[in-house]
Length: 198
Image (cartoon, rainbow, N blue to C red):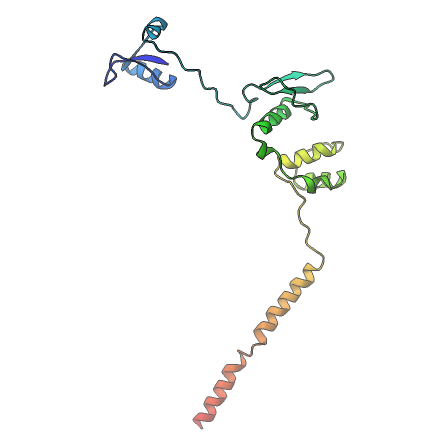
């Protein structure tokens, strides 16, 4: 926002300030408002406003169009439909696809492990992760729900032999305490010292 500075080194000059700072300075009386004619006479041009992309909205330049039968098509800033191979049932799905175009690394997790599972296994994973999803959901929807919850692979099941190996480890640990003969050493040492004392 252009204002005329009233104090300091820039006193009398028209300067550009962030809107909230300009409003604060206007309220304090350190700057005054200027007209468009005064801005033009000073040879100043307002910079193009910077519009920040909010994560809860479509990124700037993207747009959606409703399609017959429900759902949406998503168009990138160049007007290209980027949702031809993807079903977008709602605005949330459209927004996520748009953000995935802007940040492709974040949106392409390795889902090979999930795709190798059956629908029943995927549904079981969703239940275990407490993800609410329809029992009629398609495989792609199940995988998408798991990815959204941060799950990109099924949990690794402990091999059946692990219990035995744990017992074996415990046994080894026990044998380690009795094997070295550290407990016997003080007895021998004390016997030797008794012999020496005699």
